[in-house]
Length: 606
Ligand code: GCB
Image (cartoon, rainbow, N blue to C red; front, side, top):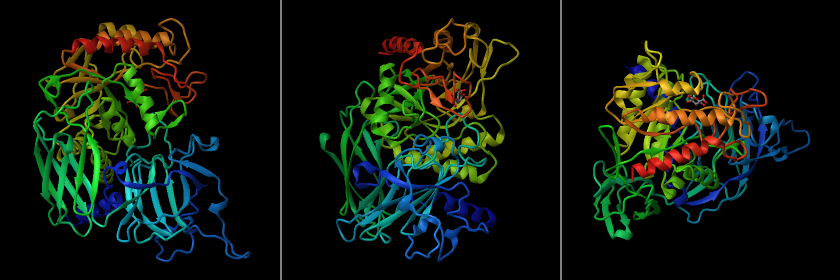
């Protein structure tokens, strides 16, 4: 027992020595550190380990280590690095797409940026906030370690109030994207392992006691009561806090306890509910004696009843598409509002009311733009394929990433589903792992639905497709991936399939698809042609429509995306070609098949 407690303490220190990132960065006073950062490629981690392989930053008075950002002070001094002379990488941005020699790089790169920041009030506090960096990140300010963060897709921040100098601050960040067996995701994925500081970096200034977090959503099962919590951080924890929705003239005033926390509830009448047809957002202000934040939040209910999905009490069909966090035309990670507008704009053009953000938490702009455009969202934890189910550290890491994702996006009306995992092989250890994650997610947020992308199996009848998985008991919506006509026979096989799905729950298809090189034409039996892909879509949609509980789908995938597993010369060339849109932004024929199907579904569910 004692051992277990120590292990849990060590693990929580590993994954959370960055404190819980504060919520609503766009609503704060920020100073952007985006732009050019000097960098050193360090495959042997010479800037970190000495020649006895001892980490320099574990020495209380380190004399070496790139994080010290030293400069030669006299001509005889021996110093083997100099950030001032180094080339630069743009932040945010993966390193792979910025320099040809980094395309396949997996290892450590050191980033350094100099900045001057003056606080606007003496007792204010200052943090440095990272939207994400992939995968392990060590952060240092003025030679002092702020902490280590593990996980490539979630935000983290560190307080820098006491380390900040009046000018010439040096922030050094060591980012290591080496894949590891015990990591989340693990070694094997069908997407590019983009490394680097992939999202925004901001200096954030807040009052000495500030509003660190809040949840403001309709209470589960109600469209007449908004409820949630507020959390303050700082020495003045007990304060009176006001939550206001000026447009409907509603206010709640609450007192935070000695931990800085309080729950609240506001009765509301005639709220205009958020939906794809009416993406209404209300301006909300949270005001304490010392701080004030504003944010636009929408309110909607989402639940399942039997085999139906009810949005604001009305049955919906989720017309979706899978999306990777990638801008195909740049061939790199997507990160900006413009990227989100482009990707979600294409989804809109496809007549989607829903997207699956695969296979990890995407940048914050996605859910914010989805809120504005009226697109429902599935967010996913990077528990993909063959995670180490028995390893407690792997579980702790997965749970931390899920926590951070939920913490960041819990006020987004667009987000309706937390997905635990993708295509994981059934075993007792895996099901326990996913069940624990699902319970954890429900504990943090009981207002949304839980799902996972499951798999399909056969039985003695060659035309039967069976969905049966012990984890299906724990989800609200049964989702599965199927590739009939691509990995499993030819598209004509779709015409013969019988579905065996016993769950009395809504069923959605989280993936199906076929590879096609945009612009390659031929007959419907020729692989990689647009016609093959188009035919597969034409046959798959009626096949899926035979499932009585069919309530939505997210075909694989909106755009072609880079994958080191896809190396067929002159066809794939390092890209997974299952996109409905090619690498240059041109739509393939199947795009229009799905667009028509969604038009009909929209009318059917009006
Ligand atoms: C899948 C995976 C997805 C792959 C896709 C494919 O089942 O979930 O990550 O990219 O198949 O293209 O094979």
